[in-house]
Image 1 (cartoon, rainbow, N blue to C red):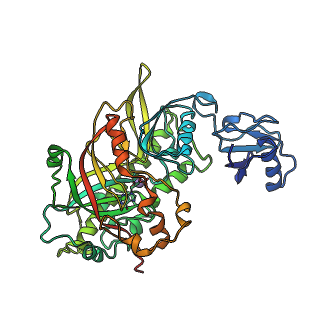
Image 2 (image 1 turned 135 degrees about the horizontal axis):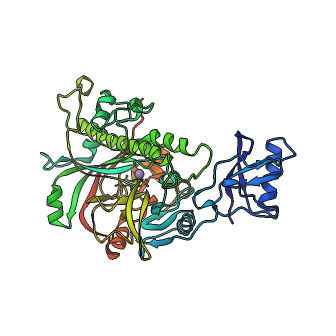
Image 3 (image 1 turned 90 degrees about the vertical axis):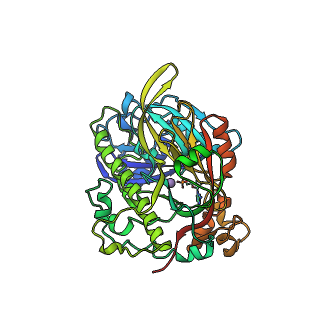
Amino acid sequence: MPSRVITVILNYNHSKRFALVISPSPQTDHEIILREARNKFRDKRLSSVFLVGGVILAQGEHLPELVSTVWVGKGEPYCGPPPVAHGSVAAFDAEVHLVSLKSYIDDKAIDQCKSVGRLPGVKLVVGLPDLHPGSRFPIGCAIAADGVYPSLIGSDVGCGIALYELSARPKSSVNPTKLASSLRGLDEPWSGSVSAWLSNYGITRSSAFDAGSLGTVGAGNHFAELCSVERIVDETVAAQLGVVVGGLYLLVHTGSRSLGSSILAAETATESNPYIPPDSAHLPEYLVEHDYAVRWAVANRDLVAHRIKQCIMPSSLDDSADAQPQLDLKKIVDVTHNSVTKHTLTIGDTAHELWVHRKGAAPADQGVAPCPGSRGDFSWLLQPTGDGQYNAHSLAHGAGRRYGRNVLHTGTKISKESLTNTSMGSVVICEDPDLLLEEQPNAYKSVMPVFEDMEERGICKGVVVLRPVVTYKMRKER
Ligand SMILES: Nc1nc2c(ncn2[C@@H]2O[C@H](COP(=O)(O)O)[C@@H](O)[C@H]2O)c(=O)[nH]1
Ligand SMILES: [Mn+2]
C-alpha cells in the first residue's frame, strides 16, 4: 500500500487533531497511530483507535483502505460522528464502467474509481475517457450513490463550461494578437453591482467572495477562450444552436471560486469524506448550499463573458452606472461539470433513484455539451446519444490531464514564446510562468480519442469543432 494521509482526532476533544502520513512500515497502522498520537497529544494513556461510528481498530490491525479519519481515546466511549449509512465502514462493490479504448488512462485513476466503488451506498462508477487521478478521488468520473458525498464533487462546486456567441460574422478578419491585447482588467474586481448581477440568477444572498471574485476567471485550470469554427459535423444541430462557420465564439471555464471551497470546508470540518444518507435531514440543507454555488458559478461565467465582450466590443454602457446590468451576448450552452443531481438508473434488473456525483463530467441529459481539448487542441460540441444507463447520463468534460503539474516543471526548458503562441496559431495570455508551463497543451490528453471513445460507445455524436484563437488565463496588471 502506498503512503497515505489520515486525520487523527482526539476522541474527547475534537478540536485537537493532526495529519499523519502512514508509509509502508513493519509496524501495524494501529501501532503507528497510537505512537504518533501519544507524542502529539502528550498523553501516554492513549490506547484505543476508533473508526467512524465507533468501530474499534484492533491491536495488530491495519486500517481499511478507504478510512481517512480516526479518533484516539484512553478507554472512554467513542465520541465521534455516528455510523455511516448501512452501519459499517465495510463497503460494497459497485459496478465500475470505463468508457475508454483509445484514450490514455492512468492506472492510479482506475484504482481511485475502484476505491470509490467500495464506498457505502455507491452503486455505479463511470470513468469517462478524460479520466485522470485526482489528489484523492478520480476526475473525469460520474459516481451514482444512494446518498451524497460532498467530497466527491470537489471544492469547485458548480464549475462548468459555457459557450457564447461574440459575433456571428465579424466585420474584419480575426487577428489573435489584436484581440489578445484588448483583453484587459479582467482580473480586477468588476466595477458594477455584484448584488444586482446575482439577482438576475435568483441569488439574494451575499458572500465574502462576491465583490472580489464574481466576474473573474480565477487561476488554475480555468480559462476563457475566443474560438472560431473549424468544422461543422452536424449541420442540423449546429443550425439549431446558431453556430456558423466564420463566427467568433467564447468558451468560459470557471466555477464558484472560493464560495464552493467554503461549502466543502463546512461539510468536511470533522470528517474528510462524510456521507449524507438519502433520508438525512442534512441532505436538503446541503443541497441548498450546493445549488447556491451552482447558480453563482453560472452567474460568474456569464459575467466573465459580459466583461470580455466589453473589452472586445466596447459599448457606451458603463456597468458601474447601470443599476441592473444584464448579460449582453447570446449564450449557446452552459453545462456544470462539478455537481450532484438525481437520476433514475437501472443497476442489474432494478431501477434506482440515485444521486449522480459529477467530478469533471458533463451532464448528458441537457442537450449539447462542450468538450474542450486544450489551448493547443480543438474543442468539441457534443450531442449526447443513448439512454444514459451505461454512462450515468454523463460525458467527458474535456480531454483530461495527461501529466500532473509537478512533472511539467522537469525536463527541457520550453521558451515563453512557444508557450504563448500555440501550433494552432492561437495566442495565450498567462503572465504567471508556472501556470503557463503547467497548463501547456502537452499537459492534456489529445481530445480526438476522447471523442472517438464516446462516439464508439454510443453516448454522443459530434456537432461542431472549435479552434482556439486567444486563450485568456490571467494578467498581472496590479
Ligand atoms: N480549449 C481549452 N481547453 C482547455 C484549456 N485548459 C484545459 N482545457 C480542457 O478543459 C478541461 C477542464 O477540466 P477541469 O478538470 O480543469 O475542469 C481539461 O480537461 C482540458 O481538457 C484551455 O486553455 N483551452
Ligand atoms: Mn472545471
